[in-house]
Length: 199
Ligand SMILES: [Zn+2]
Image 1 (cartoon, rainbow, N blue to C red):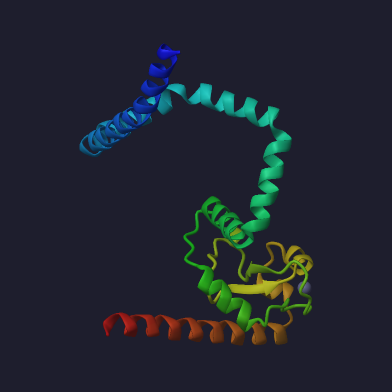
Image 2: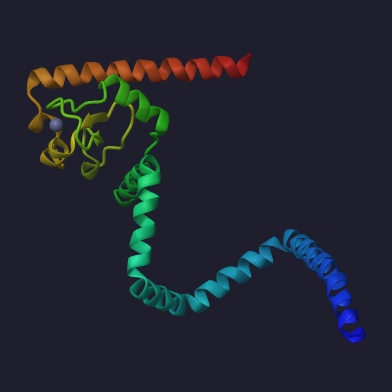
């Protein structure tokens, strides 16, 4: 009985000590890392290069084994981060097309507002998306003067067509006015920010 008690006491006092030690080690590790950042990064990079094939193989295997789990997680993530995902998809496509895009979520809000949150072509509000007015595939970046709102079906019908091949002359005139309005709103917001920063 006495031995057991001793053991109990030992454990009880050892835990905070161990925790403290672990904490100390963590702090030291962090300090070491901060002082040897270059070396650490080089090592990590070398390590990655050396094990790249293995890692890819492992990843492949893992993906194969956990298909359901991953797709379930992805679905939930997409549902909770719709705008983030759409932006990421757009960036990936822009990167692929080697086009530099500067179009942020405020720009997106301006575009949606100016287009009254409905499809410019058919007024539908099903599967609305920001469309590259002049197509990305021909090297045109998304910006406030090149972003229109189209529904899913109009967007896919438009595909990689140039605006002249998709819209009527009247539509082109109208959409160009909307781009100008969007641009002027953006400019106003931007000037406000600059003015605010100066004050
Ligand atoms: Zn439409």
